[in-house]
Length: 92
Image (cartoon, rainbow, N blue to C red; front, top):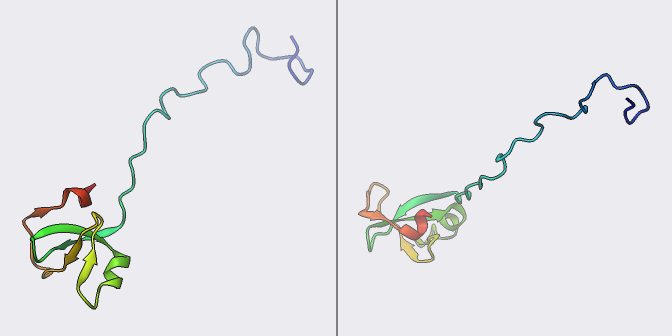
């Protein structure tokens, strides 16, 4: 029996690539989406916690008015304020 290189094969009756060489199902799982880096900030008007990016914190630091991930404008409350709940859109 000759192999590709013209040398006699040392495997008798079996090809050099016999057996399981591929794990099935390893690539069937979806990778979860990465969450954007943001911090939680409570809106002083509604007492709802929203997520705000670092870039938006820098942009609105003088006025205290920030754009949340869900798209609404947030007026920052005291950082010790726990809030009444979390915005569903920002939590995604």
